[in-house]
Length: 374
Length: 154
Image (tube, rainbow over all chains, first blue to last red; front, side):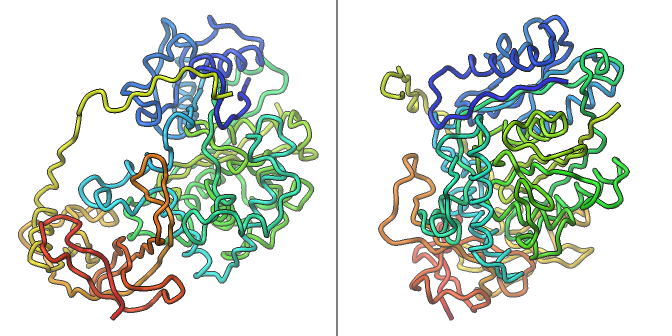
């Protein structure tokens, strides 16, 4: 119905609540709606990332929840969209606002993710956080399928080049001249993962509006429909999982495609916006969703003018504001379908997919199918 | 732009530390570690052996009884995966360490899972997936995760 994303910054020069207001009010303005039209709000924040408990208590006013019904999802913004969707489908609501995001510059994001680990087993040893897990994940993928670091670095190059065309992407991530060599020679975070293969945590918020069919048609002549959604998760311990693939994405995809009536995803989908927390995850997801054979994701031309464009906006490698990144993928898919992705528009995009994730090595994935038309 | 910002840094205004009880299954496991032994438990349905032990097999949705299904395991295992990092993970300013840490995923022989520990006395270029490794015990075991100092090549 409407959407808005604030520009991503590595160190934003405005308060976190102003940023929520800019995102939510911007989405209402985008749809030509007012505060009084909102019937339910779903916010997405994380207590640890906000540095306090009940992280949505101070966002009532800027988030449109003043004297309204509001609930929080402590996952990715893409998961909050599922909650919003369920509220709309219940028949009790006419307009849901879904917003999410955080200010990653205010805390050490990668260190904080140690707090995701089992407090009685892995946490005291301090070997597992998002970065070391990504090292395991990339190595598992390379070893199993004989994929090279160069093929993975190509994804960083593509997405950071795409980000250069997206005015809302993180400036530090935008690089139209990046080379594979520079990606491979950037600082080692956790071998084989280098700095430029990591989606940079940053400051940002985004908001999306959902409405039932009848209201949607009254509000806009360019509605975008959620025609399928799939949601799946894997077991927690890294040592119990096959990190060379993404079983949860594979199953989420199967469900979403079935619900949307898609039999041939490769030919029926025009563009994908996938939340890749690391360059290699984009390839793993591409293969898990069946767009390429296992280990052959890098053969597919996924550039903006390629055979199957993935992350034309720059994806999460173009900026990763925790709790907003998956929501932004959905917004980017909406822009493509509405023909509003200026500078990185895929010609005649009618059907798109968008994903969100949480957890170490994308333990949990959610995938949406979005379509334009009547 | 950050120079002009007024920042209120909340650095530990109060001490609100957590004390987690590890539960009956991990109690047994840590007791075993204290005597420098590794134990796991086995799902009665699928037969998977877990290290550390689990109360429930997620795959089978089956409770693993506390009084049976324990398996004594060797201190040997296979390196399934590894990563090398120059960063201190538990450091708020992400400071670097002098020597890179090699962190391995080791499958203890006879188990179906892998545990994450440091690889000791080895150079990065010598690490090979599939190599046999052995637990290096901490001299004075305390009955916690640090009893396993790391793994060394066999």
